[in-house]
Structure formats: structure tokens, C-alpha cells
Image (tube, rainbow, N blue to C red; front, side, top):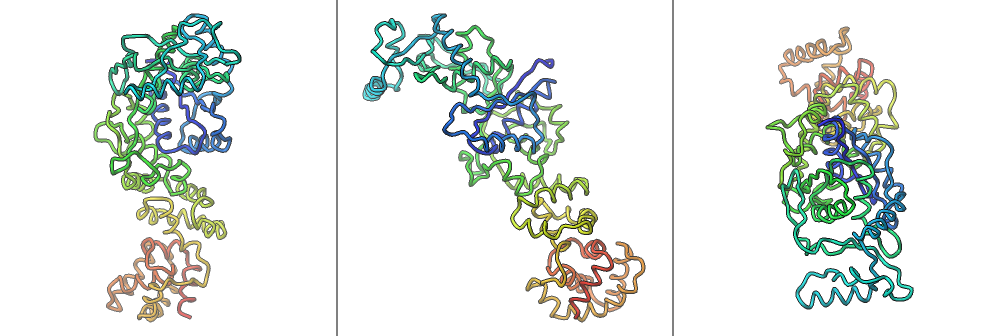
Length: 473
């Protein structure tokens, strides 16, 4: 295929960019980029009661954070209502749709009768061939499409295969309500056609909609886009994904310390695969992605797998870029103000210097922040109970003996510090841990941290010796 491919991501602005929507956007973006085409963005905001500008902003922010750029300006579906009405009226003129004057009471009675007879509650076509002159006084009509009476509507789907829908099951559905507003079913078709969309990639909960939308395409004589209906994401227990499984907004994953490239990598692997490859760069995903390789079965969301992939990206990230990413999310994370208030040029530089040791132990930016907490601590340190116990149980005595060696050390390098501490340990006939544990406790006020040699080196001579002197009184 050439650059003629056009996909679209079309979220409803009722909340944040949730994880399922993020994957749909990613699949559309990858497919478009793979074919040298475009991904357009349409905000499906026809339901004015449920939409908000804040939700639109959150969706755009989520896409930008994930690195999923769209082509052109976002299109508001609501702003195109006049065009939707125009097409509906054109279908009436062509004899492919008709005015329906059935009252709400009639429609209710129709449904009740169908249920009592064990039939699905469908519109019975009573206005399909009647003249509008028979319309009740003052009753505003809806416009209904004339669905084929018999036969089947075929959806040729690139994921689900060929699916046949009996036309008898589709009935003459409404395309324009009696208040003049288009239905979702109709607006989507008009928008996709006018936007030049060639490929529709969306959740398989839209599969039945696809059959109805094809009827509108065919009635207008418009080409039907290629369709790919992707299975929804389920939780690890096989149930439909909910908040308890991790169905949160993109902004929540950012605040939980996930890197956007890791989340994209994980989402791409939810229902799509390329051999046994687990870790993929964006460039590789663009090169390899094809809807033909999307699984038919539902993918299961596994937060542990996401953590593992995120840990890989953290370990392989550039130290300075990782420090910037951590500092950027401080306002969003719980306890982030602890770091923000203490942030200065010195501990920024220390943070970058500490990254090689910090990132080996962290699976998220939150764990990275926790590991870096010692850099932001103010003197004198407030020891955690376990750290204080180590110092009180002979630890301070050991450090009093070690302190002169450290004060005399001219070569304050990682190698110089390690040599000095190991030589002290040998001389005092102590296991290295018996020196490292109280040293860690005194320098960080905690019992867990990056390697103690990294800690003492990154703190620098003045700060490290100052903290030791504080602890030893």
C-alpha cells in the first residue's frame, strides 16, 4: 500500500484516555505509519450531556504523552451536525430512507408486543411505504434507513474474518432523530467518508455497528473502508477489564511511574505479536505492525508484565533523560512535594550521577524516586527504626573507627572509596556487610538503598562526611 492509507482515532470525551482507547489509538497510529499514511483524530462529542472540554484536553494530553501524534486538527463530530442532516435528507430524496412519524407510545407498544410474542424488539417498518400526508398533526419525524428486506450484510474484517449478518435482524434503524440530531451510527459513516478514512481499526464491541454502517455506505454508493475489529482487553481473571484490573487513564499510568515507550510496547503486545519479540522500539513496531497479526481472542491485562517491561526500559534509559522524566512527574506522584521542595542544582546533578545504581533496582519511576530519597534528605537525617537499630547495635562503634580512613581519603572516587572500605573491613576482620549496613543506615537513614559505594560516592565528600559526623554525635 502507499501513503493513501488514512486511519482515525475517534474517542468520546467522557473521561480520560483509558487503556483500551490508548491501545486502539496505538494500533491506528502504527498501521498508518507502517503504510506511510495518516492518522486523523475525531472527537465524537454528539452527546453534549456527557461531554466536557476537560475530558477532551485529557485525551489530547494522553496521546501526546504516549507519543501518538495525529495529522491535522482534531475534528469535532458535533460541529458537523448540519452535514449529517444533509446526507440523511439526501437519502430520503434517493428513496433509500424515509420519514417515520411513529410516536414514543407506538414504539413502546411495538416493543411490548414483540417481547410478548418472544421476538426481538425491533421497529416493524410501519412508515416505510406510507405517505407523509398521513402523518399525525404536530408529530416531528425521525429519518430511518431502508435496510434490505432479506439477504445478508457481509463484514469482511481483517481480524475477525468474514461475518454475515441477516438483514432481518438489522431493521430500519434511525439515522436522524426527530429533534434533528444525527445518531452515532449515521454520523460516524458520514465523517469517515468525508475524512477519507480508508481503514477503521476499533474494538470488536463495534462489530454489529459495522453491519449497520455498511448499509448506510451502500445506500450512499460510497466505498466501504477496510475494517479491523480488535478484541477487547480482559483482566487477568478473564473478566471484562475494569478499574480493579488496571483500566485506568493514561495519566494514572504516568503518575504511577510508567514510561510512555514502555506502556506503548506493552499495549502493542496486548493482542498483537511479532514472533517471540517482547521488547520492541517504536521504529520496530511501525515496521512490523499489521492487523492480520492481531489475535481474535481477548488479550489479558497483566500489571506484572507491564512492570517488567517498564523495568527493562528504565534499566536501558539514558541517565539524564531518566532524571528529567522523574523530575517531570514529581508534581503528580504521591509524596512528590517532598522532592520538589528540596530540588536544587546539587541534588539534580547527584540524581543523574546516582542513576546507574538506582535504575538497576527500579521497575517504575516511583520506585526510582523512593531509591533516590536519600539524595533529598535534609541533615540531620531522621532514621527509620530499623536503621537506628543497626546503628545502636554496634554500628556507630564501627563507623567511628571507619571515619578517620574516609576523612583521610584524597581520592573520593568510586574505586577509591570501595578500596578504602574493603581494606578497613579486612583490617578489622569484619564481613563487608557489617560495615556496609551501618554505613548505609547512617548515610540514608534507611536500610535499603542503591549500593553503599554508589551512595557515598554520589553524596560527595562534604555531604557524606557531614552525615556520618551527625550520626556519630
